[in-house]
Image (cartoon, rainbow, N blue to C red):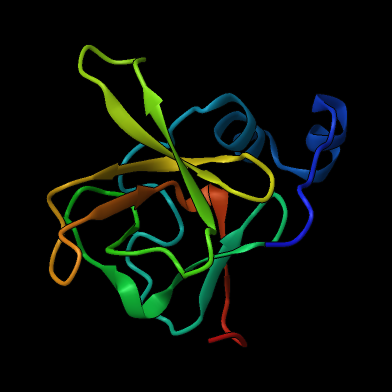
Length: 133
């Protein structure tokens, strides 16, 4: 993992769109079925929209029917971190970029094999690099 990215809120605001800032830095969630990557099946690597760290391979993307891009596993090497999220009535597992701490979405234990996990991510927190992978 590369060196951690630490910026002020003002520096993040300059780097990100308002929607990206709300999701990545304030843990907001985009509305279902509105994100640009929900129905994309192009090959490549999904990176963090905040810092560019590689997060998910298109090979692990699947249609979960939930309205957000879903993956059954992150790329290897500690690309994401899990944190307990108590913002709803039941606890969830929040997923953040390990490099910049940006909120990406949540993981649930109802995904396909081989992991059984569903990493449910916000499209605006990601960028698809079609030249990678």
